[in-house]
Length: 165
Image (cartoon, rainbow, N blue to C red; front, side, top):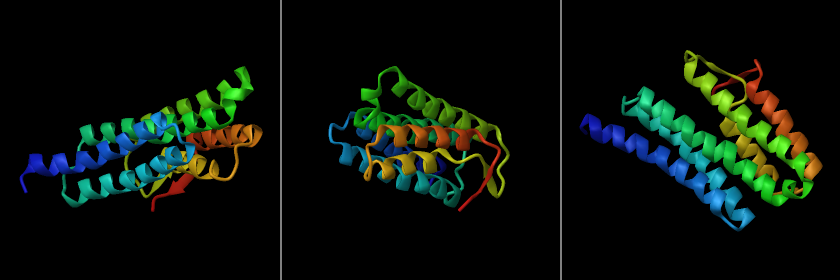
C-alpha cells in the first residue's frame, strides 16, 4: 500500500471518531447521543493503532486526532449533560460545562507537546468523556453530574499519571 493510501486509511478512522461526536451533538435522542460517544471511543482506540501498524504516524494525524477528541469527548458529553439536566440550572449549569470542555482542551494541548511514555499525565479526555456518557445512562441528577464534571476536569489537568493500556 502506498504511503498516501496508508495515511488516508488512518485518517478515515479519525474522521469517523469526529463524525460520531458531531452526531452525538446534533442527536435529539439522548440515548443515541450517548451511544455515539461510546462508539467514538472505539474509533479513537483504533485510529492510533492503525497509524502505528501502517507506520504512518504524523504530527498532522496527532493534531487531527486531538481536535476530533475534543469534539467527541469534550463538547459532545458536555452537550449531553447540558441537555439532560444542567440547562435547568441556569448560570450555575454553565460552570461545570465550561470547566469540562476547557480542561479537556488543556489536557489535549499538553498531551500533544509531551514526549510519549508509558503513562499519561492527567486523565485522558477519552476516558473522562466516555465515563460521563456512560454515567448519563443511569442518572440525570444535575448536582451529581455537576460534581462529576468538576472532578473529571481536575483529573484531566492533574499531574496524576494514568497507565497507558
